[in-house]
Picture (cartoon, rainbow, N blue to C red):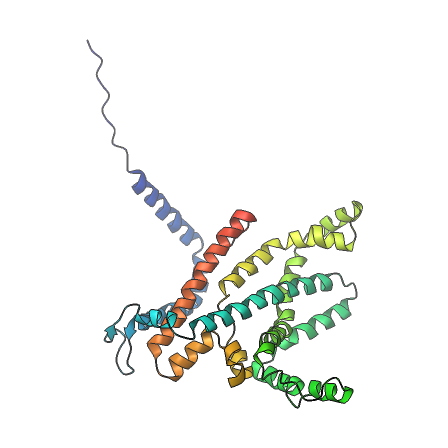
Length: 324
């Protein structure tokens, strides 16, 4: 007598089972953290209201928007405004200025706070350290209007620097630092460095405070001096923070500034100060071409997001450190 074959058993779909398990996991987690979510509800509502609901306006970049009509009632033109920006005569110059100014900021203004934080971390006199730190981050709270006034007072045609150089006999006539394009990138980078170096230092000092003091004691036993401790202990200890801020900085490479260009720039330096943000403001908002300005801003945002993902992937592959 032949043995009977076993009845076929219908197994649940792997995909459906995975979704069920995931949903069950999230329900349990939400229930477990319900008090935290309840506390966060006002903040979540604020973010949704002011950060996500206005994203409806990006549709303006794909229509010929006319004030007085709704965006959806406007004529759909697709990528017309994007192509108009790419084919504009000023596109190459605007892109060059944006990348040059942002590149200088990353090259100079990014490592400067790390260096200052390392130096401040080595100070043993607490009051002197606090004084230097306070003086270094106070400029962050000064508006660009005040900074521009200070720069005009210092390096304007009748400013202190020109007056001093004339009195010392180094020059025969005032140098137009703010009227010649060749000086603009250097002046702007210096102003950005002076204004933000102290504020950015706070982040790195906070990261250094989290490095285990026992590691430094072990380094002393192994014969590490101050420089060796900075190189082999402090910098590796804050590597995650450095990589995180570097990735965000790469993503913001098209954000070369706005207020400082408008306040310090003039007709003589337009070839060097015009960046994407000022271009979108002038040709989009001031001239009433809102769809054109929206297209320029959206293109910049999309490229920025792509750069963040690219820098994050590169960092994960090379340094085994990433945001996500």
